[in-house]
Image 1 (cartoon, rainbow, N blue to C red):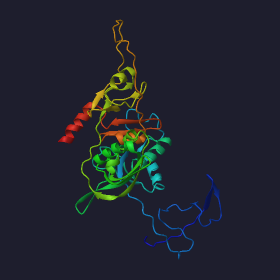
Image 2: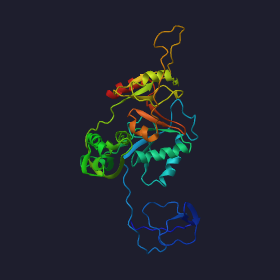
Image 3: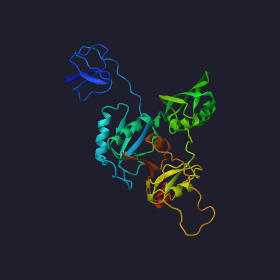
Image 4: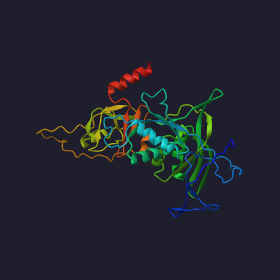
Length: 368
């Protein structure tokens, strides 16, 4: 954009044949190619053979819409599975990601004032964008924890602005009412709706905050038959409070191995994230509570054994399948006072403060 130019040297050129790369000496018009040798190239720059050649218009990259903190894992299970666990190793991996991930921005100078711990503030284009990065990192052997994603709020001319997205939704007409009800409650505004051959297409504009945590609910409401795609449309006036979370967290108060008998009694209170035999620690979130209250539980408590028999004691223990947490699912359902612990083999939700005493102390100090 500034009209500056610099000289550099291309060392290798490749084109594609199917899914394989082939080294070539000449590139022809229309080829999709890979070139090597320019370490400091950025998106939107034009590579030419003569300095007099005019540059192509620069490509504009959409701004990030959400931010979250990448932190060193400090849970009781830290270091068990990960190969790369230190702050320096996480930083090096994020710096490497910045070279190829053009929609990502990272603040390496520390976290915002709300966070109690050192870490790196990562800005991304949505939950999926961040989830793909985290999934790649865990497969490479990294172990870390992240905070709840927050939408980026701007202030211009004394006005509060937040990112908005236009969602395009295709659902069977029978489920359209439920989808519209949920999204309008999240400050969505329908711009277009039409039906064709039993499928309703809805165009709805809503704050990015409204879409956070909705995709999982969308799959349930449409029985997996709906299609939802969204695109960033710009920063607009702040839409006010959006209440999305109507469940509370079921938190383990002890460490140990989960027992089926205990899960059998807890499954009536909400949805469980763990199953028989899983290891848990104090402060780990093992499920949710449908009534919206926080609850501390003991998922390791076994059945009391005695030599006396009575009716009802030999009842079969039937435990429903657990709601297995993936990175995307966990980013959608986690609360503000929780961290998502990500290791090469496991994804766990945990409280920022592991003990009940620490949580109560933090709650009373934040109120003051």
